[in-house]
Image 1 (cartoon, helix red, strand yellow):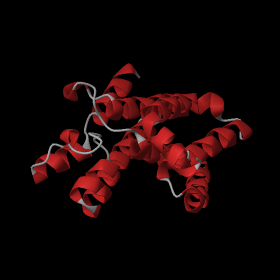
Image 2 (cartoon, one colour):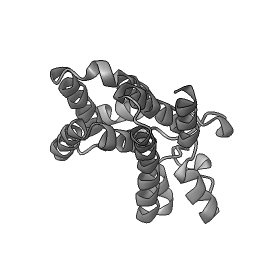
Image 3 (cartoon, rainbow, N blue to C red):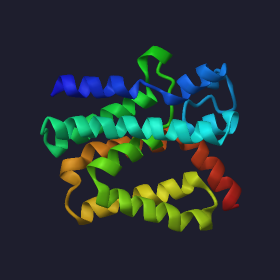
Length: 186
């Protein structure tokens, strides 16, 4: 199991934005937010870079879950691997622990591991986005729904590693959250 979790962390170290930036001759760590994620890639390199980065980062989350299902690991063990792939994305050792912010990797993990909770999260995101006009604040609402539904369905004890992932992702988005709140609720 430890090998699976370590491999999951290493898979998380594949930062799609870094490779797309390298292909385009741009170091995204030196541009705008410096974040190696889909939003920064899209802002600097265009919509196709956003889509490719999002799909690549979500794909690695899905891959880790698929590997767990392939080897018939428990849901709990796969959830730990989901946390590991997200941590690998957030803190890649080979880039001095400066990676992305984890949303796409989280989406890939939850889409495959907990599709019912993913659906709740997705619906809440779509419901709140027109009101907030902020992906960051809509993400907070969708995370709240994910946790609430996991508690309601009594599956939290199996997927608690994803709660840790949410906490770390929210911490990584702290400045974005503050900016969004300040610009919308003054």
